[in-house]
Image 1 (cartoon, rainbow, N blue to C red):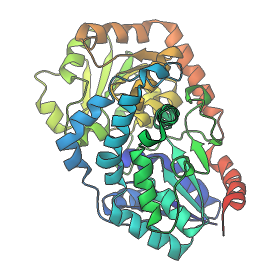
Image 2 (image 1 turned 180 degrees about the vertical axis):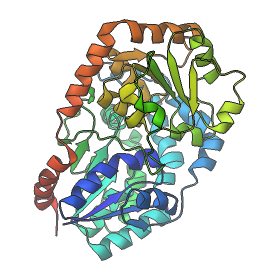
Image 3 (image 1 turned 135 degrees about the vertical axis):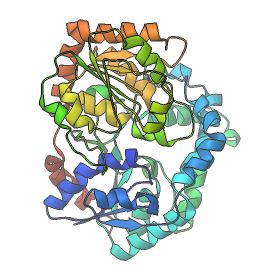
Amino acid sequence: MRVLIVSHAQDTHFNGAVPLAWALRTAGHEVRVASQPALSGSITGAGLTAVEVGEDPELGLMMGSVGHRMLAMHRDPDYLANRPERLTLEYLQASNTVLAWTFFSQLNNDSMVDDLVDFACSWRPDLVIWEQFTFGGAVAARACGAAHARLLSIADTFHNSRQVFLDKLRQEPPEHFDDTIGEWLSWKLGRFGRTFDEEVMTGQWTIDQLPPSMRLPLGLRTVSMRYVPYNGPTPAVAPRWLDAEPVRPRVCLTLGETLRSIPFPTPISVEDVFEAIADLDIELVATLTAAECAEVSRVPSNTRVVEHVPMHVLLPSCSAIIHHGGAGTWSTAGVCGVPQGATGWVWDTIYRAQRLEDLGAGIHIPASAEFTPDRLREVLISLLEKPSYKENAMRLREEILGCPSPNEVVPVLEELTAAHRSR
């Protein structure tokens, strides 16, 4: 069958699709990956065939101008299923409107969706698999009659909050019903003679790469798939110093590739981490760019600074990791059974860090007054010295490895495609 994978032009959201794309290829299916031109290098660098659609989103410009205010809206809410009272109608209404016009409309700009629909109607895929915020994939599938599935690499906090939002809206008088995202997608679909319903936002089914203990119970048709680490097309060269066993507990510090490219401050201060660990009997491996290094006054003697090292190569030798809460870093540490200290400062990172602590596999460090050198030191010592963190991190690893591999998922996708394709 023909499979079209769709992602907006951001590596961290595309990388989660690469192992599945190759599982489909090795099963004999034709695969194309559609995105804005900025992602073409990452697609071809993964050995896949790119289809360029539309113009690059002005995401950097948007985040630089309104990103601080948008992110401020999503730093405090508790997305856990047992705390829906934190998500008020007023907050959800504002979030719905802001996300529609400043975020989703950038990721799915008009030129991208128009070109994507043109290509889909010409190439006629049997299945469209789309990254969870790239709703243009669902629009294209509707337009060409393909089956379509949403691919999750992160907890489905967006759909969780949307369900709460719609439930609250339905309790209001009909004249007060105001769903900006739904109206925006209705307009998108209407241009191609199609109508909107919630399936456009959830897919006909969801491919979820998180282990079951991390998923929100949203009642959606879900295909479970094991997370397989893929760190992108940057050189995945294993440094030779990793050949030798560490003589002291090795700890990784990473701020993530995505946060480095977005123009606003991260919640982690490298100076604070260095101050916290300077006298500890550990080996800290810090992944820092040259610009980040230039902002550090002193690198402790127990610290090794590297610009890039593949996380799936480094983490098996680590006793703990301190990180920004990113999905790829969280999941790779989970696969490797490494206890984590995660900040959890915005959107799904909040849920992921909280849930990690609930499972006993790590510690949530809120990006607030708690984020001090003393608190970081306390967290790291706990992760290294309390056996329960390692034991629970290994349980999380076993749960992840127990999920079906991408290759095992392919026959399921074949059956679902045959059942849902409308042509």
